[in-house]
Length: 116
Image (cartoon, rainbow, N blue to C red):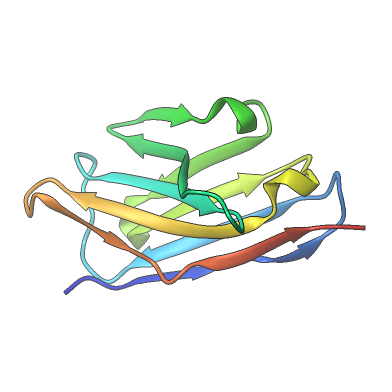
């Protein structure tokens, strides 16, 4: 069983920044996809960004504001969130898909609240 430990959520004012981190208990390789999803109250979980083999993909709503990155040596994925808006308020979940296991794992979620 793989565990994903997330950190970095919290309360921030509109226009502010936060950095989320997610560390995996199993070694990660470039071929493994790492990503962030979010779920706002009353809404479905949606993709925020993912990264694999150096290639990144972002939801249109966060392009130009969020940056995903990874450090394979630390088995960690990051999400730098800038210019935060109230509509970014959600629980953010880390996800890792291990190609060699043909399955993915989820973190427990971290709350991000953007409010003045």
